[in-house]
Length: 80
Image (cartoon, rainbow, N blue to C red; front, side):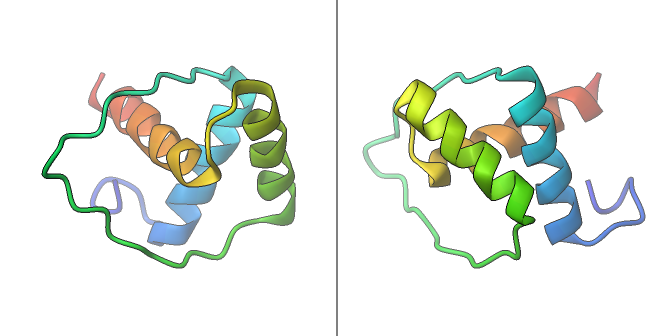
């Protein structure tokens, strides 16, 4: 997405999270048996973190997975 939009990766992630909080399109997929999960640190807006906490409580999905879902949803929108 950073090649399409003039924005930093953290800004794109925050925009993705905002969109997820708004649409609540939570689709969880099975993790592949051999999948390696990298760990990253990203600055998150306080309002987005609060929204993620609400989604976590509502859907029982970890914040880590919610961020990944947010990114996947946004990439799907960009590809349309």
